[in-house]
Image (cartoon, rainbow, N blue to C red; front, side, top):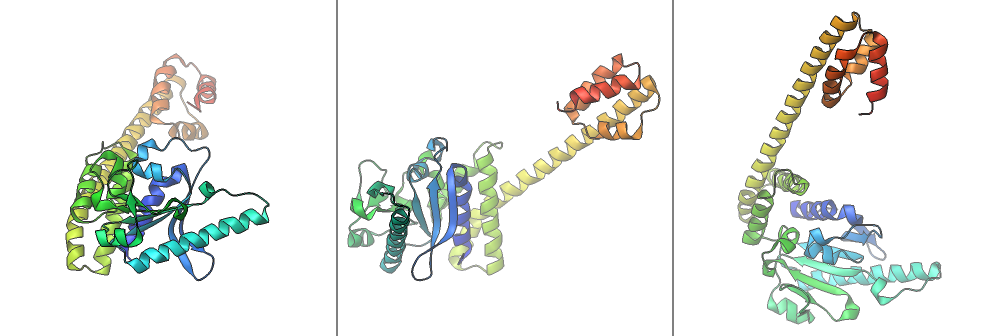
Amino acid sequence: MAKNPFDSFSKQLLEEILSPYGAVEVSREVPGESQFVDVYFEPSQTAMARTELGLLGRIAQTPCLLEPFRNQPTPSEIRSCLLKLFQTHGDYQRKARREKESIQENDLPHLWVLASSASENLINGFGFTASNNWPSGVSFLHPFHRTAIISINQLPRTEETLFLRLLGKGQTQKQAVDEVIGFDAEDSRRSAILRLLSNWKISLKITGKTEEEQELMMVLSQAYLEWEQQTEQRGEQRGERRGEQIGETRLVLRQLTRRIDDVPSEVRSQIQALSLTQLELLGEALLDFTSLSDLESWLVSNSAV
C-alpha cells in the first residue's frame, strides 16, 4: 500500500526495529470503508525489555497504531488517523463480546502520529498538550482518546530519540543518519538501517526527484556509500575466510595421504565440508593417526564441533 518512497522506508524501518519485540503488521486494514493503518504493533508477552529502543520502546509497551508523515499532516489527515483508531477500537470490542471477555480502556491500542513537524496551530486546533513525563515534541489528547502526536523536529537530540528522528526531515534527519553511520561497524542496527536508507535512495532515483528530494538524496548518499563499503568489506572477508578454508583443506588432505595412504572419496567429502576451526583441529589430531579408522572415528566425534 506504499504511496511513495518515504512511505515504504518508514514502514520498513518500524517493522525492522519492532519485529523482535512483537507482531508488526504493515498496512493493516480496518473495518468499514477501505482504510489501512500504516503500521500496527502488538507487543509480545515474552519480549525482552525495549529500553534499547529509547522513546520508540516506550511507545511499543502497548498495542499501537503508528502513522508516519513526511510532511506536516493536515487537520483532515489527523481526523482520518483518529477514524482508523476508533474503528480499530470498535473491532477490539466486537471481538471481546464474541469471546465473552471484558476489555479495559488500557487494553485498547494507542494512536501515535509521527509527524516531521507540527505547527502550533495544528497542536492547539486539536487540543494536544505536552506532558511532563515525556520529552519535548510529544503531545497528547485527553486520555480516553488514546492519541498522541510526535513533532519529530522538536525532539531532543539524544540517543533515546534516534529511531524516530530517522523519520524526520532536513537537518533533523541528517543528524540522525550521521549518528547511525557513527555506530560501531559490528552493530547489527547500523547495517540494517543503512540498507533501508540505501533502498530509499534507489527508489528516489527511479521515481525522479523534486528539489526537496534532491536535498534528501544528498543525505542518503552518504548512508548509501557507507552501506556499499560495508557490504564490500563483508564480501572480501567472506572471500578471505573461504580462501583460508580451501588452503587448510588441501593441507590436511596432503598430510592424511602421507600418514594413512589413500583417503576414500566419501571421507574426502566429509573433510571438505568441515569448518575452518574443525580443519585446524583435525590438522593437530592427525599427527596421532595410524590408520583410516582413526580418521573415521575422529570425524564421527568432531562433526558437530
